[in-house]
Image (cartoon, rainbow, N blue to C red; front, side):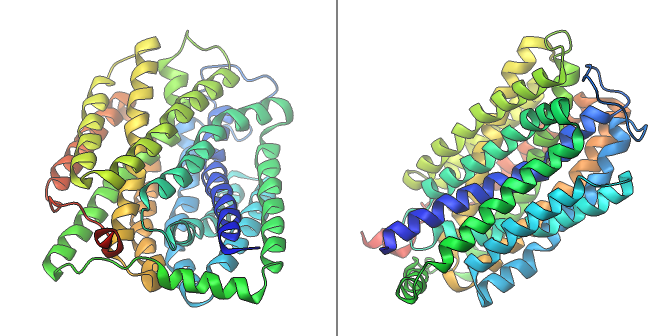
Length: 414
C-alpha cells in the first residue's frame, strides 16, 4: 500500500468520524423534541417519559457539551505526544459504546451523565481529526471543507434518522443503533491500521514533517489574528449550536400547519442541513484562492441580515430563510480552521486546534441553556435577534484581519 492510498483511506475514516461526532452529539436534541410534554406534532407510540417540557429537558445536555470542549485539550496533547491515529480509534470505540450505554438510561439525570461520557470521547475528534486532515497538504481549504461536509451530514442526518428510529423503535434505539455503527467503524479502522507496516508509518511521520509551516508573522500581528480567530470562533459557535440544536423545534413552531408529524420535521431539518453543507465546499474553494478577510466578512454580514429577517417569519418564507442562514452558518465553519492551519506548525497544531475547540465547545454548552431560557421567556424571535447581533460583531472583528492573503510558505514559493 503506497502513501497516497493510505492517505485516501485515512481521509475516508476521518470523514466518517466527523459524521458520527456531530450525529451522535445531536441525538438528544431530537429526542428532547419527541418526549417533551409541549411538542406541537403527534409522534405515534412516544410518551413524555419524564413529564418534562422542551425547555426543561435541554439543559440536561449541557454536561455533554461541556465535556465536548473540556476534554479536547488532553486529547490533543495525547495525540501530539503519542499517536493521532490511535486517538481516532479511541474516539470511534469510546463514542460508539457510550452512545449504546446511553440507551439504557433509567432517569433523565442518568442520561445526562451518559451524555457527558459521550462528550468526553466526542471531544477527541476535532483537534486530532482536523490536524490529520491538513497533514502534508499545501492547500487546506477544500480538504477541510470536504471533511466539514461529512460533519454537516451528521448534523443533517441526526434529526431525520433519530425521529425515524424513535417512531419505529423508541428513543432508546435512537442512541443504540448509531452507537453500534460508530463502534463498528472503529474496529474496521483499527484493523486497517494494524495492516499498515513500519515503512508506511515512517512515511506518515515524514508527511507530518513535510506539512507546510506557517508564515513568519510578527508577534503583534500573530496575536491579532489569534484574537480574531478565537473571538469569531466563540460567537460563531454560539450561532452554530443554537441553529443546529434548535432547528427541529423551530420547525415544530414556525412550520406549524406546514408539517404534521415528527418525521416531517426531521425530513425538513435534513433537507435544510444537507443543502447548507454545500456552502462549505464553496467557502473552502474561495479561501484557497481569495482573501480570507473578504470571504469571512461576506459570510458574517449575510448571516446578520438573514437572522434579522427571520425574526417573525412563519411557514414557507421561514423555511426559505432558514435554508439561507444555514448556508452561511455552515459556510463559516472551515474558515477559522484554515487560518489556524496556515499560522501554526505541525508539531503543535493539534494543541492549537484544541484551544480553538475548547473555546467553541464551551460556548456551545452555554448556548444550550441560553436557547432554553430565550425560548421559554420570549420565543425564538429573541434568539434570532441575538444571533443577528453576534454575526454583526463577527463582521466587525474580521475587518481587522490582515488585508494580504495568508498563505503557507510553500504556497508562496510555488
